[in-house]
Image 1 (tube, rainbow over the protein chains, first blue to last red):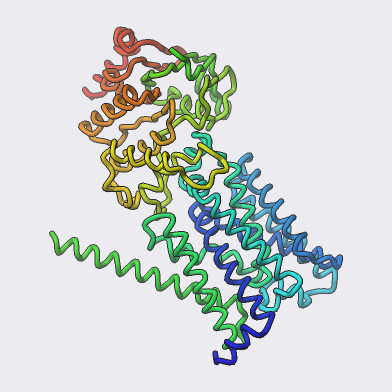
Image 2 (image 1 turned 90 degrees about the vertical axis):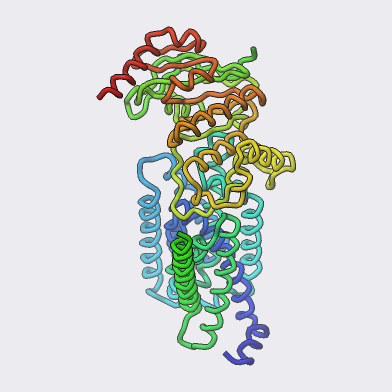
Length: 284
Length: 239
């Protein structure tokens, strides 16, 4: 990456848009991912990205591709999924798999019906650094800002419902509402993020930074903070990689960086534990 | 005495099995009630029904002048995800979450109450430690502190001394008694060692299969429920 590349980021509109939205998305996926991973609901992001793909593909077949449309549909599906999870005997993961599979099939059919695997199909699947145009930049930034703001306002509640849902419910907390907030925020993040990172990889951004951070953190607050920092760092590294290597799509650069950081963190934890146990044996 | 909670002809059926069949009792201000009974007589189900965690199939549970956000709760077993990063202080503060739906942050008086709880339970030094690093007894204290933070009028404790050795178990009962008499919090406690707990509580609810006892603890010790329970315990010890 040369100085010209860095200059280009600030002077080329689509690169600047991608950088700003990508950084915001990285923060959103990282903080929501902490809840999803610890609640063992990591599949939710993946399922919702498939729902979003299905909606976009069907909308494209009718020439009505609007971000607002997928936002509404995916939020509704997230809400329904939670109801299924709470009220029926089908377990959460199975429900997610059923719903995401159905939407995916619908989406593939719609895009094949409307002219086969075209560029749209590719960019929805794998994401594109060109995806954030003038038309959807403002709404993408606004939505990410809303996600982060709502998360911060409900932070204490989200912790309580993640740590011990039945205590929260038993002592007057609206655990259903807090779960819904987590699901809706995840839905919004996935819909915005999949344009840039793609259906297939957006959900892993809710998992990688969390797995990197939660063994390093001693409390929930630092876990959320580390996760966000790691995610932002990985996005910046991935963005730089993607600019430096022409053949490397943005999403793969970001995932590779995340994977690298995760392995580093894993090694750090191992070394720390080894040092601690050695110190203990020396003391004895 | 003001009534806080009344269970009238309560029935709970789970998956077609009747766990609780026609039980009536009430909790008054400053009561310290111990719920006793053999395994499988529905002690935990009863507390869960009161807390709204399992649906009731018959009868009524009524609260008088209190709502669920005035109740504290110590669960029997808390399954914490391995590696869950949570500090003692974060967990204790989570006791206040049910108090208000929209207020995003904790109030000053809530923080003071949490500090008092830490002091009362002698866990001030653990404040910033990770919950999972603590011993079973320390974890139990943290969860009791969370229950106290949530409790304005009433606290439900489900086998609070499980996993504690005899000495710390007795200390725990002293603590609960102190809360009850000095802080005016009514206590509803499930206990499996009633012979010890009966010295601390004012009333006993003993659940048996098909019949139950509810009354003052001094009357309880003269019932067949108590005698049979002690006998069963003695038989178990002989074997």
